[in-house]
Image (cartoon, rainbow over all chains, first blue to last red):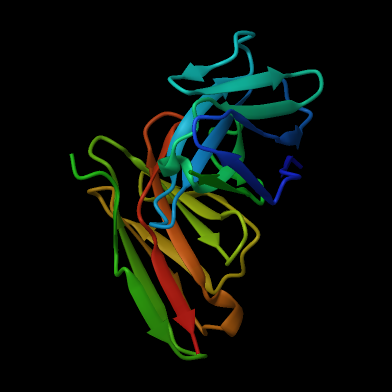
Length: 116
Length: 110
């Protein structure tokens, strides 16, 4: 069974600085997808970035980028130039590409606080 | 595009009662998944509907059931509510691999 582990329950960063959130996962599959979701206090789960396992190039979306290490089963999220609006819970999630399903398996989350 | 919508926003029930939560998917999406998010935890997959049938189910008891309608909207039903069913229930719709979430329904069981 696949598992997702986020070992940092809480992180804090000063505005305009850079922060990295860690995520590791366990799977025996070769093809899969990885995601980072943001959940602000409003509760809406928002997709931040996605990575296909078959792609060697790390995904980037504006200030958000990932460091995908397939052999190490590691998928960290880097937030550059942190903004107050980045304050939220961040969830790492795994999705298999098999079995004709797109079920997400989530980690326990990292609470990120951006302070002025 | 209205995105994924859920109703109601909040709900309070007592133990033993039954509840129905509703979800309307994003336009063009044909697959609906339901997740339960307990306080301080990540969402847990309940089940997924595609073409009006349950395609996959997570580790939840039969008290949790669902339905998908021809317009792709979906309902989640929970019978014989327990205190432990108190959680945020998230609906997500998808067309291909990428899931879009609704704002959730906060269920409190007293």
